[in-house]
Image (cartoon, rainbow, N blue to C red; front, top):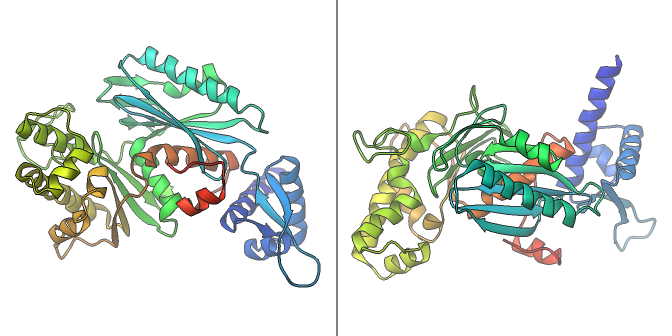
Length: 399
């Protein structure tokens, strides 16, 4: 076996060991050997390296049986921190997580400009603040992942962001040059899908996540990997035509899906009926609960167009799990029932349909775990985050 092959196998084994330690939330060396299929000598050498690198912590398991208590290996969650950024039209959300994907700190900054240089300067400033605040950890900020509400190529170049009117920007290079940390640029819908797979649906090999806030995006996870297409542009389903010669879209077409089935479109249409441009999602919830005619009629139209687009998506991908990321649908109790009633075609097959529990945090949380996966160099990352486990961790906050 040549050196290159040996190094590659060692890297694969290291990733397998780390993923199993995370999956079992602590495990002994003996059991680690069993679940990985690696011999005890390999486990011993790899674990020694990971302990030296401060990525693992040893502790003793509490039990009532007689005999020596086994040494339990856990990931050192405080060895480094991941920074996820959701860069939207009007705001940038920064969330910092530990190495187990628990959110520690979130900062939201309003954007009052679309100027690339000004927003770049803001991002650099915030990244450097986080770097300073967490420099005492073994690895500091292990990676920054920026979620873009637009088209990102496979080489991480921003091809186009309609709402910011950015074209062909190398944000990755500009940030890395000024912050000296690894930076990854990804589409927000892809990161949302990644979060759903890692935190909620880690047994699914065919998952679609549809984000429905300012626009509509589709993130696809197939066999544990993002499905991005030849150039990386797959998933722009918000610009699928659902109404020929319909409402004009800023992409240049007419009748795009997101003009009828995004939260912004719902708010826009209802605001026009009500003569009120300041309606919020909670206002809409109250209006629907009170039986307001305009709000209920607009919801019927919204559900109708959500289902029209979903029917096309289902026929294209035949997914096992579909997750709809929409605060509006989350607050509407009959959403799933009414959508399912409209998906009655005998050739439209899917497994489960859910409204996301991660909501608006899906993008930044997906960004954090994307950075963690890159840093640890593991092929499969499964995490669990609940209100109960967050409370047990004490110092962490639940988003």
